[in-house]
Length: 465
Ligand code: GLN
Image 1 (tube, rainbow, N blue to C red):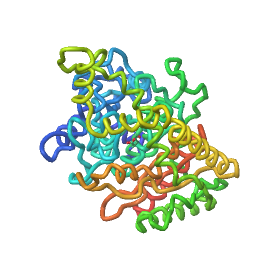
Image 2: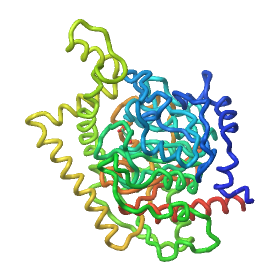
Image 3: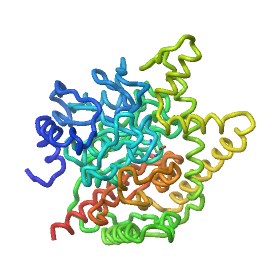
Image 4: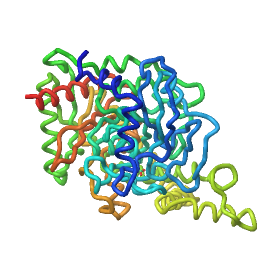
């Protein structure tokens, strides 16, 4: 038995160990507030690759037996009558779902400060944010409560918190993981994603939840290769020989924090040492991704969130007539950011503005997608970039919504194009983790994981020296 083998570490982190750690970190004024609900009675069925492994699930993914609130007052106490396919698959593999994790309301945010149930603290520095919107899941893994957790991604909500918390986060190809039971935010962008304490553990989690599902019409009927094999440690000194890694110049602007650029350069140097060829490439429309995302995502959100009207789900405000009931439920149920997005989305979809905003945004989205396809068709296997432009910022430090949106500047592109991407730790700045991002062509998760595992192994070897 090898104690540094991530699969061994995963098997030895028991449910009892998870509860011990949970009790140490969750509650109190300095507590992480990473969980919104827990199930102390949860037991695994004993079989499968995740037998007895404690896992946590973001609170916008439907579970039986625990509430699914999406971090919103409007769904306070709401319990789903069915379970998400991803959760069902985790349980079928033997995993023990210990709780639901805190998040930005309806997955809108980059710091977890938009939760109706209070912010999550970063386990590495409790005065800082864990990132968002899947901040609770990221904090739960970084704090060592669980080693695998589910999150969701619409524009970076797994990768950015993974970067801020110093763990691994994967956003799979659009369609790779069933979204049945994932509460919709922006349906053309939404994915279920996976956090892991290591590349191998994230890969194992993804492998368990991936694959076609007849309950989700957007799930892809594409075979899933052995993703855990892709992430296995190797004895080969140049395991990436023959691999071409593109360095998109637009992701390394002159304005990029020099220390983050330096960590990325060092990672690219490692990739070269592992045998990869690194090549500069260009994705010229990258700069338009944030404005395009913040038209498309709110537009789809305004439609998806119309269902929270006090009639079918969650909380209902008291009122004398139906229209004031709708109005009061929605004004008291939604927080500021969600309200802002609904207003913005309704505006860009309204008659007269649709062509000017939504249609143009879709055209630019097609261009972003096409540029990725061209780069990958030119012989580039993977792309490597920073995950986020900063390390974890202080609670309350970023108050301007637009500045908050810029947190996703390097991540939203993969969601717009539907390609897989992941973040992994590539060093620290003043003790705070820096994330490096790989992006791959559609359904190219295995290649991405292979490179990520080799890079992780190189860092570990460097540290051991
Ligand atoms: N921060 C982005 C937003 O607020 C991305 C969120 C996400 O991926 N769910 O929309």
